[in-house]
Length: 204
Image (tube, rainbow, N blue to C red; front, top):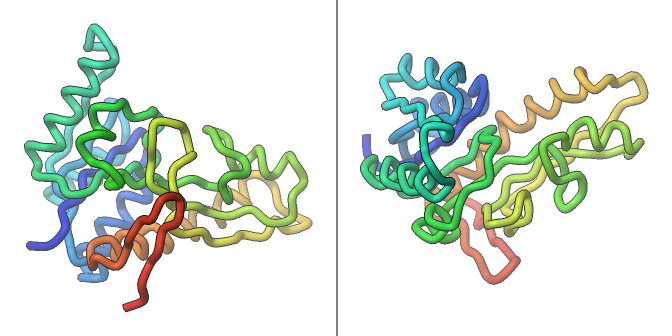
């Protein structure tokens, strides 16, 4: 398979990874997942990668003396896989400067809220508990600050009167599984350009 090569970083079940793998397999994304890397040994996303015959790697931050050494090992693994873009799909760590500098405006993150509202690890529950009527999903380029980089795409999700955090989370995940592959398809097609904080996505 040819096309854009994505290095996907995960920390958990990898449901968004699966959506990306499926989109690559169907041709919806003109590219492939070159490697999957997790900071958690028990992340089911590693199993998903192996089932798709994609190289899967567990890099345990605790085995490195410093944060810088871990970031260096992460960059080397991405480089060795000939990664074009880095995709953070539920990766619950802030990337260090070495990876961000090696892939400028080529690190893509998914967040389960409409940034800049409700950044951080609890975007779904924070929005629910705040009583807002609309939340959603954001895909953005990552930088050295959590959930702060230029926004590529957003999609709203209403919070219904009978919602719980769990039901809201289910519907947000459904939107994530659609929006994330769409954005990566646009990136693979070369339809995404960045001008400062503004990101332009051309139609097909």
